Image: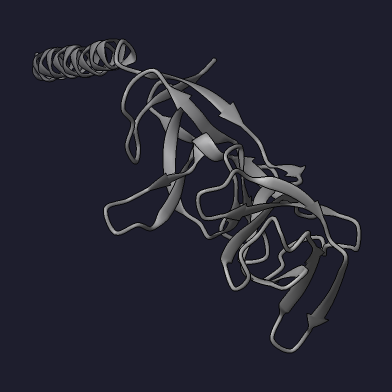
Amino acid sequence: MTTADTRKPNKKYLLILIIILLFMYLMIFVEHYFESCQIANVDTCILENHELTHWLEGKGIVNGSEIIAYLTPEGHMLQKGDEMLVKAAGADRIPLPISRLSYDAPKNILTVYFDINPNDYKDGAQVLVIKEQKTKKYPCIAANAVHKDEMGHTFVYLVHEKKSILGNELVCKMKYIDIFFEDENYAAVDLNDGKIKDSDLFVLHSDREITEGSKIRCL
């Protein structure tokens, strides 16, 4: 009699425990189901090697039959015969070939000379010289994948796999990085600091606002 009375409460408590666990699991499942409706759909990009476009720009002055301009070069150096756009005050940009140039390596100053007709320019007038250039190839991410916080610091969102009670899920991970050169399409990054890797997957676009830890779905 005593043995039978002891077993009945144990079965009862076990049944209650099972019901509680099933209820908790059901609540978690429902929570994840409704959260899945709020998951951001994202496009992604990877690191790729690209040349970047930038405008080489400097100031010059008309000196008799030539224009002398000073620039701080980046990427590829200019050569004799290369054309630059020359802009004087109140005039249109005119392409002129470089007649000669000299480079001061310690100061990284490039002096560029253009032969001109002195009748076309006022002696002593200041001019602007510009040229579109390409850099060497750098590891880059798409410019749209790069964001800035309120302090102006640069960051990206990485696709990160996280374990949950219902299995693995994708979330975005915020990562601050250094951008050392960029144009309208790409941003060059430094892989030597270990902040990002070749294998990282970056969030490019999202159909809704995302923050650190937001659940995402890759399209």
